[in-house]
Amino acid sequence: MKKEDISFGDWQRWLFGDAPPAFVGEVLLRAIILFAVVVVLMRLMGRRMKGELSIAELAVVLTFGAIIGGALHQPKSGLLPSLGVLLMVLFMH
Image (cartoon, rainbow, N blue to C red):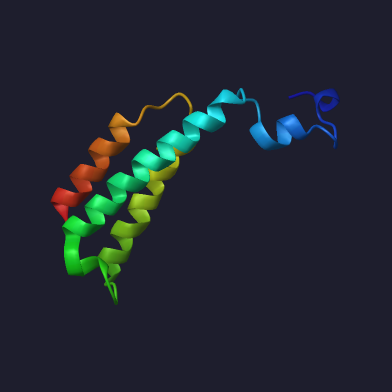
């Protein structure tokens, strides 16, 4: 990005970045799908994810966040790799 491209009043760039405005709708849909998957995975993990968490369980929750963050914000990456990794973490835990 060139210095000339940066202006304080450029709300389009502030809100959407370099992605087209339609990507906001895609991010919303990705967030809904990933939220539903994580809710299902947390329920499958049962009581281990409620109350006090051990260090290993806290690491799993943080891993969920890292996996979801990448799939949510990168327009070039699809959801299937992240969903596959989430399922792998479920079965490893």
